[in-house]
Amino acid sequence: MKERILQINSLIAKTLSDIFLKEIEMEDHPLITIDYVETSKDLSFANIYISVFPQEKTKKVLDYLSKKRGYFQKLLFQKINFKKNPKIHFLENKKQREIEEIEKIFEKIEKEKNKE
Image (cartoon, rainbow, N blue to C red; front, side, top):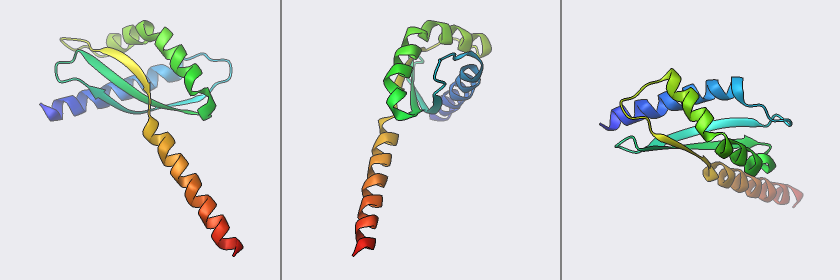
């Protein structure tokens, strides 16, 4: 069962990425990356974790995706068909932001170390 869910997660991520490339129309054209997908075992929902560059646009992008969630869900399940289509939810991948903050701290430490 776990292998099946991993395959479903991968298929949803790949298909949504393709849809995003063709369908997202935002005026400032932020880069949206689907980092990973977590689908429930019973296929009732799928959480899509994204990161956005520039990071300041994350809230705007999440608002946009949430507003158009039904549209993206419809396109997704026209391309892939399961017995039960999960409801999709878009969330920020906070792990990526934490990694970037840690990297900045290391860079700052390295600069201070080089000054001595």
